Amino acid sequence: MKIKIPKRYLFFVLAFSSAIITAVTSGVDAISQIYIPDPWALGVACFIFGVLVSVSLTILLSIPVRGKSIGSRSIDPAFKKLRLPRRNEIKYFIISGFGNAVLTIGYFILLSLMTGDVSVVLPFTQIAILYLVIIESLSEKDTPTLVEVQSTVIVTFGAMLGSISLSGGIDPIAMAIVFLVINPGWVLLSIYQRKLKMLRFNDQPNDALNIRVWNVIVACLVTFLIVFIFDMFMHTSHLIDGFYYSINQGFWVFLIALGTFFSFVFYIRALGIGKASVTQAVKASAIIFTIPISIVLGIMGIIPPFTTDPVMIMIKIMGIVLMLLGILSFALTLTKAYIFIKKKPGYDINKMIQDLWNIKGVTRVTAVAGTYDFIVKINTRTLIKGYERILRRVDEVPGIQKSTWQSVLREWEDI
Amino acid sequence: MRPGKSDKAIAEMRKINHVEKISIVAGEFDIVIRVRVEDLEDLLTVTNDIHLIRGVQKTTTQIIEKEIAL
Image: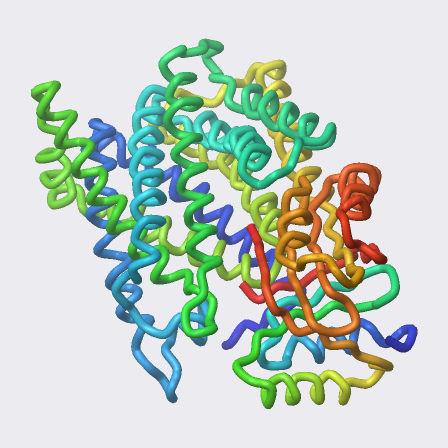
């Protein structure tokens, strides 16, 4: 029997499926730690299987059926077949692969410090939003607004409360790994994967499957290098152990690699339907799904049993609710607008493009031929800021004759 | 756009080839569509497809000459 899902629900089905798979996979991570207690070796083994699973499935998805590949029909319309990376992608693959390698090793070390409790570890990864706001402020020409600062503080404090260890202790090494290793790694991975997805080849958007495959391959090589250097200096054998475990404990590592692949595929597919920020917010619900996983792992005796102290449970729930509220407010408060501009004769177009581009909050300046001369795209958190900091500055640019503000109410994009 | 026709019209617009982005806006216009075409023949096809959608009253085309974007 074929299940048909209405398109308006498909987005939520995909994003929640991705979140549930992420939570279940993190449970498998915790179980794997019993069989592979060395987090460095587990990271190495995960990448070995990650490459094998991603390449095999992508080859399978490259098989053409009636002129189109299976992957193009089912996952990403831009996908044709497994291909080599293009020259202008290599730099981005190296940076995003490095981010992925650092993030994964940091995650497994944290998981081993937190004795496998995934409901403690996963909320910590959401603090990456704090870093993204700072980076956007520096690189995307935007000053953080009150809403952004509030949401960031809510998410950070929510993550801290949600991640509270049920034994009550705070480990300074674990905090250092969260703030200095995992989240910076996640930020590098997400920013440069987005840059890769935004590249276009032969008038087609870049495809998610090849991005995933090459990211895992580069991350695997970077992990080998990092672990090899670590082994050299510390006289350990994590790299060899990683190969050993990937042969002897292949089943668990295979499950992690499979879960990660499908979590990623559903996430990308959801990105093609809904807004990226909303998709990210829905995906963050994974932190809720980790609670039943932790309870089950506790009952099975894999991690210390879940507390029955109502105060501790309440603190954890408050933290998770705060975090989700912060992420949702981030996703839903972004306002976009177009400004259509007519210029006066006698002013240099290139100079005007540069003047418009220098205004904070401007994400795109387009010189056009038609009724207008420029179309400027704006991203802002509030309309007041849009008026005071952007529209007034646009009108001050020498040569502007008339500007028309068009607020974007809703938007669809072909990702 | 004619009032009350936007939802169906946007569903039709999303099916048109070469359409990259559709934004519903508040102001002088109702909808901004970004398309990427190889030649003017393709642009004519896209414009024609948009004109054939019920509810579309008027279109204005702006050709991109130069662009800076994040």
